[in-house]
Length: 257
Image (cartoon, rainbow, N blue to C red; front, side, top):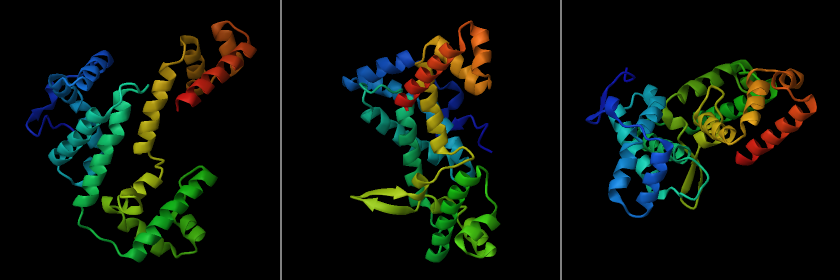
């Protein structure tokens, strides 16, 4: 119900500026030199990034105004801690900072508590689900998860339903020198969670750094499902050359990732 909302925290979102990469680079450089005006412009110019991230949490019955403010805290931290010498876009660095701030807020702001036995079964069920996905390459059924755990189907189903609220995923499962690791940090999401989103951003950046010919080969090979022979005929080189270029491009992408 918030998707078409125009004003958040008194800000008209339709009027927010969008910075180019060149503008971001210049503002980051000036910010590191102590230019407060550049810092303000950089923060304001990235508010759309915060807006895009909080949409991912819109189904949690939290105030979008509150989430926006919390996300802005993460954005400010990203601006203040970003290392301009890193070979990475600012947005790639800022996204996990913003998400992390929102996660902590959701964890600390949620009053729901689940019994230890149910929570532990839910955690085991989620882990079993990930293991079954890796083996079967599809979403497992509740019966398959229950069989793997040696538990009754009804118990597994109740446990899984009990952790629908955010507290289940943001529960600390490990603490190392004061830095907590949460269940969400240990799970993958086949439906496209935060990790997939971040991986896609980094992958796009890696592909952008390839030569035009390498980009075309990667696109035809893995997005258009062409064979090396078909690609060779289309761009006018031998299949062996396509193979070499493909391997070189994949190696470059692997190093970037």
